[in-house]
Length: 569
Image (cartoon, rainbow, N blue to C red; front, side):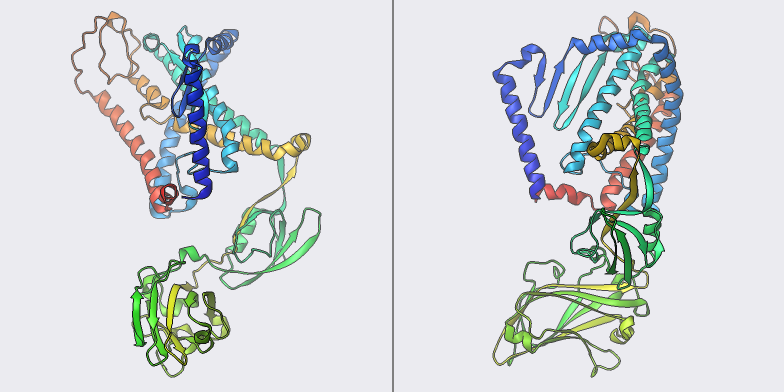
């Protein structure tokens, strides 16, 4: 388990344990507080009074607003279902990380500073959502039975409990206003947050570097917080322009970046493009022992570091073995092979290294191998990497035989018996389709506008908070309108099929496919299956399928399950 995630969960667990103990010692349940191991709920009449006061102050305004929200609610419901359908198609046909739908789990899928920025927006969203339901209920005479504040693990908000029997007896229009109010206020907050965010800064010429990945080609050359104003002499308009320009480069291309620092000084930097190792390395297919003895290990985990995978013993003070890889397993052919890179970690004595080499065997002329690595004058446990490319004048097809097998021949010599261990041996086949890799995170260069100038050093923090408020408000407002129980969208959708008439014995239901009990607690006869239920459950089933398929496919395609597995290992 990663240290930062482990520390976070330990702190969170200790906090809730202490809070639970304090609640029991001081008997806070007598004050209306309910405290569990990981949650807190406090009922208060003050929030009821606030809701009632707000509702009765401008009843006509609220009634008009929520009525408008009904139309927006149904449009948003259709929009989000169509969007999930299009996104699912994209995940199946051309998956990209931008299409991933990942559940929000504090401390797991979201950690660090972004999580802190999200706490306030989530609390605002939950509070306004529930208050909106309460206002919509009160303007039409529905009782708010209870209200208060709650906390669950790391999420804070509010709750409003309505008298559902009174809600069920109201007209269809009134019920729809109550059901849509929470999501509609979320969408309104998203709109105003977006307006403020987009007016805090204006786009400047160039692209902002806000992170340089460790051990990337740009590490130590480009610096965070610099502005890229040109690449190979081409002026950069914004981050999209820079992204498109960088996509044109292939591995090992030299690229000149012209950057501007915060002090205004302009500097030129040359970055030699790399490639993304995490997406390209493949395991070896087999090995040939030409001279020597295999003591232990296999090829299965040769791409994992920090553990001995293969150990050979020399015969007659000489060791010669060959590792083989089938390049067709990389999805490329020899004519498309433009570069070959290998990462190697060996364990041997200094004397062994001084007389050792690694060759690529030439299939057309075995007597003329290409020296891939010279291991002379190296110390033990070295991590090596090297490459040969067409630009260096080599034709890689010459080193691949007719079966698409590439042979890497290791030769060691010494004056006495010795052992050689391979801890790591990754091979990377680069083709003319391999994208270049820089390891930089970019964004638009922002120039302060009036509001940002007024806020001064608080501006970036306000910006981040409002940005997450916009994102979460929009997401909650739309997803909550899906026709999935127990989302508000389901109650809004079902209300279309609910007639405006009170049920007998003063009972009613907001969901026509649920059985009701009469006031004398005698259950009604089971209702027959109707076309109404068929329509309702067909739409519900489609919404559930689209929602869950997007999440599950995202977790599978982008290996986001590794985020969860990291918690337990």
